[in-house]
Image (cartoon, rainbow, N blue to C red):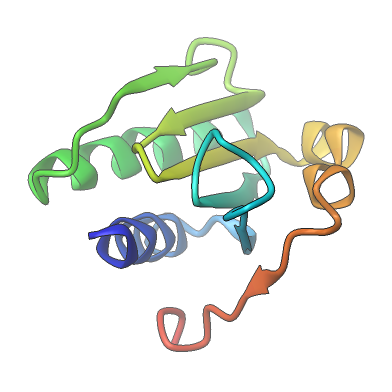
Length: 116
């Protein structure tokens, strides 16, 4: 199920033209989730569109959306899908928070099979 959640989130973000999609393997590093998906949009509207579509596609696939935070501001939207947490940033905020560096010990998952 976790692989399906990860694939759904990544494909949906890509379909909405999210940029620089990265998946981090958080197993054994964080108790929050097994995977973090990090991506960004270039405008508040795009960030919101990416987040909304991930939420909708998850629900359509019977993946529970535990919560979604930050949607109104459109700067950093967090979508909790249980074993997968998706972070959709505005481009400037992604650079500022730099989660990839913060969680630098987390292995990056290849998304080639999803983003073909």
